[in-house]
Image 1 (tube, one colour):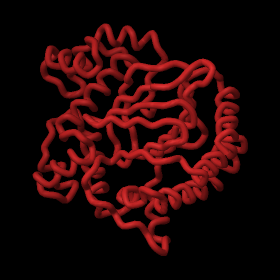
Image 2 (tube, one colour; image 1 turned 45 degrees about the vertical axis):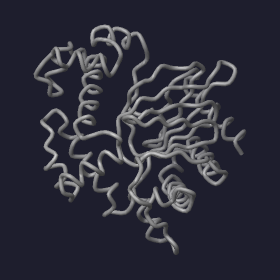
Image 3 (cartoon, one colour; image 1 turned 90 degrees about the horizontal axis):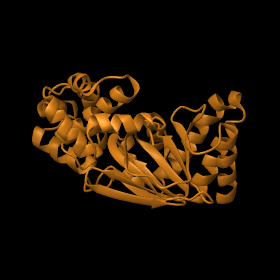
Image 4 (cartoon, rainbow, N blue to C red; image 1 turned 30 degrees about the vertical axis):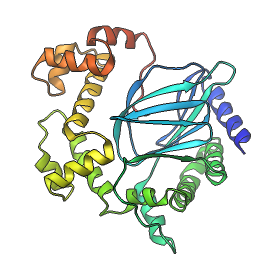
Length: 302
């Protein structure tokens, strides 16, 4: 099965430009990636998704938590989070091949409600990210999803059905007690996700924990605790990463200078912006943007 999946992935990427890079597909939220070289950590926003390594290995850092996953393993992300990702195993002879499939919370909830013995949510003692084996059932689903790309008329009909099947295997699998938190409307995961949605829409403004806590239907102290557990960051640290990622995008793709980008994302001090930017990206804004413009665009999903 894994050989068939690898062949299908390489076939699609070769037919759509070939080489290394991120390959979008006709299915929203479904991306393929290939890299024949190792990479330095790159920042990106990761949405709730199933991230699969078919060959090679990657490393992701969410806040202060580091996750490694390799061939035939999947990393599951339950809430939208900024992170740093890098390719840690790849070569020209054997490139790193990966898949990102965004999860559909509505379909997850529907499948959960139809299960005879639905999983019970685990305690809230860990981050909203975990690694599990990429078993044969999920491999089969992903292979069929790739094959539908050859018949665009089939996608609207077959894609929802395959997503239902993927949702079932995730919910009934080894981490079903974690996956179900994405679908349960009153779980701490879903409540914090609502607050993150609010924060994402207004990250340039001042962070008011009371307002975010109200969106999550929690007390400020409880919200702060669950936010930190789930994202490994405080709301302020989360907002800072969002601001700096957006500032970088404005400078690289929209031609903003550092001062204007800083102001646009909510900074009042250009010197503070430069310090925090260099701390996050490892180099001052001007130099970093020059290097980024000489490289392919950094995608929002990795």
